[in-house]
Image (cartoon, rainbow, N blue to C red; front, side, top):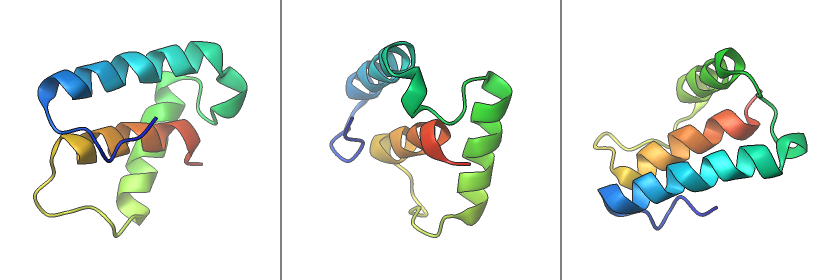
Length: 72
C-alpha cells in the first residue's frame, strides 16, 4: 500500500478500506493487532519521527495510519 499517492478524501477512504483488508489477510505482518497497541504505535511513531510536514495532507494521514501496522 503506497501512502505517497493519496491526494483526496476518496483515495484516503479507499486506503482505509485497503488497510483493514490487509489486517485480515496478513495478520502475521502486523506488529499491533489490538486497537490499544495500534494507537500506542501511532503515538510512538508520531513522537519519534521527524519526517512529518507542518501542513499535513491526505497522504500524511495515510502514512500516520500505516505506521500503526509496523511500529513497535
